[in-house]
Length: 302
Image (cartoon, rainbow, N blue to C red; front, side, top):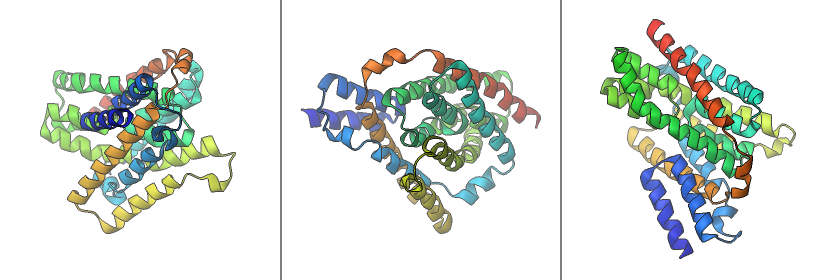
């Protein structure tokens, strides 16, 4: 019964394809079935998550990503840097735990749930910390998909402007493309292209995360999956994988990420929820409240 339920919930998570819901499925599994501490979802830890990030690297061609977003690359880089470090400073001012602030700042600055999943093993984020960060980003993405096309139409944005605005202001890649597709197919193409420029920032993000959280440890403790992630990017850059191969890597990466998040959810400790507050949501809303008009102003007037 235990393994059957595990398999069923994992398949449901893969079918739905949402990061936050994958964590909730893991929590549901642990809360209602109470697997033993030796159950393999708890023992493998973040390994599936790390494999998913490595496979994600195989979908990124660095020269292509930099080339297609070259016109906006300086602005994308500025947005990423200001959003990330601004989020960290604001989190400190609000008294938010540094791991939650780092997760939310990473997600807001780069690529939502994927960025948070990438840094979680490095900063040793607790399941409940990742859960709250993922849930906030999931809710904001849902709002963005609905409201952005309405706002874009009201402001009479062009297809290019809306695609660029979505790529800069919305967190997850899927939500960026989803919102832009509702507006127009041309907007979706622009958004997908420019979003690559933000995704490339995963490389320095992982290095910064490791330096901040693990600088007291020996060099031998450097997370190996970061090295493999960079090697995967180099491999794609050198061999220039075709679209079919990249699609396969994307599917595999998504599957491992979702399984990894399910495993993290299965390590959930409900007793620690008492220490959580509304401050992380306030942090995410403040970042977004600054990013949305700033991105619009940049796209419209530069």
